[in-house]
Image 1: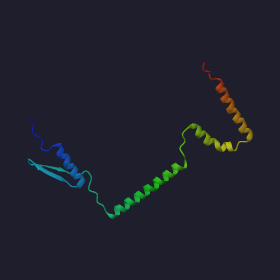
Image 2: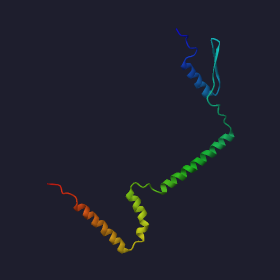
Image 3: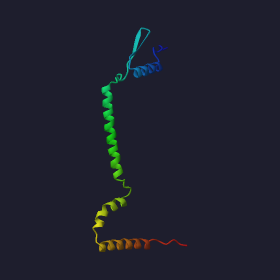
Image 4: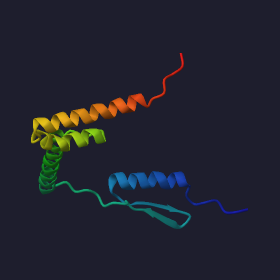
Amino acid sequence: MTKKAILSIADLKRMAAVANSEGVTVELEREGAIIRVMPFHPPQVSTEESGEAELARWIANNEARKQREANAAAVPPVKTQRAVRARIAEPARAEMSEADRIRERLAVESFSARKQSNRRKKPQ
């Protein structure tokens, strides 16, 4: 038979939880063996200076977030290619003459008329 373990995994986990939460080294002696569990991170020392630095960092992050939100609100997201083309074409369309606008409208109408005439009629 194998020898029983000095310490169970559950005991080690409990010791590690205490070591991490309290920032101390937990030491246990069993059968002449010393088992030490140390915290993973050193304890956090709170000082007035670190609080001021944290506040400054929070203010900077908050200002950056507000700027990103303002930029996102200024330009609405474009959903389709048609909307992109319309947005790009608007300034050019403003400079078009009345004759050009009529030609463009007639071209669109004739295209849609050809497209509808090519459709097969459903049998009734």
